[in-house]
Amino acid sequence: MTNRDRIGLTWISFFSYALTGAVVIVTGMVLENIAEYFQLPVAQMSNTFTFLNAGILLAVFLNAWLMEIVPLKRQLIFGFVLMVLAILGLMTSHSLSVFSLCMFVLGVVSGITMSIGTFLITHLYEGRQRGSRLLFTDSFFSMAGTIFPIIAAALLARALPWYWVYVCIGVIYVAIFVLALCFEFPVLGKKATSGEPVKKEKWGVGVGFLAVAALCYILGQLGFIGWVPQYATKSMGMDIGQAGSLVGNFWTAYMVGMWAFSAILRFFDPQRIVTLLALLATALMYWFITTTDASMLKWIMLSLGFFSSAIYTTIITLGSLQTKASSPKLVNFILTCGTVGTMLTFVVTGPIVEKGGAHAALATANGLYAVVFVMCLLLGFVSKHKLHGHMNSH
Image (cartoon, rainbow, N blue to C red; front, side, top):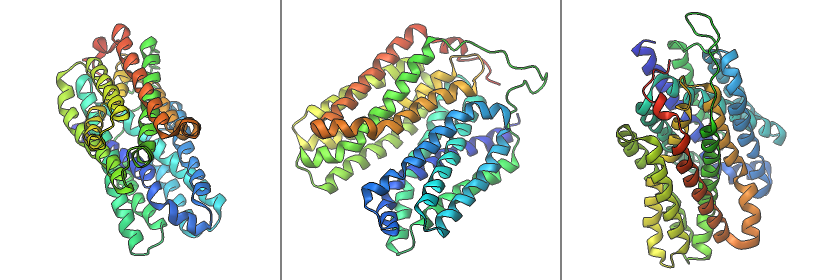
């Protein structure tokens, strides 16, 4: 692996996270326009975006096996073709079923690229450097989540059709496609030199703890963020603008936290730091749902965004360090568990809000964060990351 290839593949990883971030986060911005376009109520229209999440989940799940059968470069070229077809479908069709299919395809494409992006980082970098690189890569997800709503707002303000937002997102894939053609990818499944199959390694119980932590963390985080605006307006007497800025504060601090921790993580044991961060995040969330002082909410949200930013990527990093050579199946397994958390967000929190209001959903999220802390604590007794932390991963 030449240094030129390593840099090129690292940039593919950055763009793969930006692509998924843009596709997922822009939904809220274009939802009303799409509902008008199809003359449907917004609530009914939002259900069709489940196809997007289902596509991401399916792709991440299947790619654990596909990576060893279909070369990564071929997958990215195929993804480019699918992306072009999906965007053309969105631009030319007035059919709701075609729209749903295109959303599913967009989900599949972003799921494939994100799982390849994650695997490339865990394959190219070792030990503590791997954690800091993964964090920096994940910050591209939040960056796209900050930039693309602004692009969407600008396009919609000029009365351009909503599908131009997806054309702009497609530009990210053009960059991935061009880079994929220019660089050499690692060969999986067989050792590139000897042609012998790679020896299977036992994952160990630590992977189970990490999988539960990944699911509870994503479900807790999205469940919390999803219901903060309603809690802030209904229970804390804020207006919708102030409630929205709470969510903005969280994501801004989250992005800054990722950059900060990508430098800090190189000097600390990842298991210890993730346990400490999970404890801090659980305590901050508890403070958020018990305080009666509305002026404190902004500061709690900023702190929560900053301290929880490194948790998910550190969980994935620790997962990749549980075996001697980073295994695409293992990394994808933990990613899949996190993606299941995304899928379950409203399935789990919807009924809770109906019964007990937004505060009950926030309390549930707080409980899920407590589970993440317990899992990270238990991992300390069984983790193999110290054995594999400084071993070569190619």
